[in-house]
Image 1: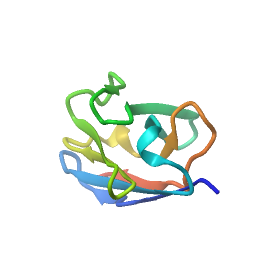
Image 2: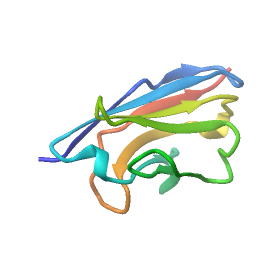
Image 3: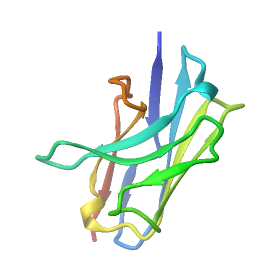
Image 4: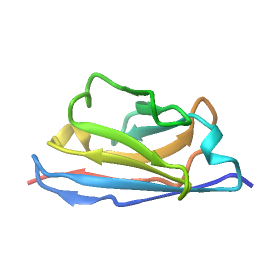
Length: 114
């Protein structure tokens, strides 16, 4: 069974940083494109970033480009999202997912507030 478990969320002030992690199991992690998506309060699911199986290709939504960095450690079956210069509008539940599938974790809450 494919399973994804996110962690690392929390409350941070504007301008601060957080690093999210996503532990994967039940599938061949190193052979799949992976993504981060988020859902802000009262809004729909929005794509944030994606990474190729080797990690050599990454893509970002314009809203996070230059502030967020996606990475992966295939030896540890773990996906990461480094979030810097956080803004209040980054407040959301963040999910990792197998790209273009409905397989995602339970999410981790990120709240950016002073």
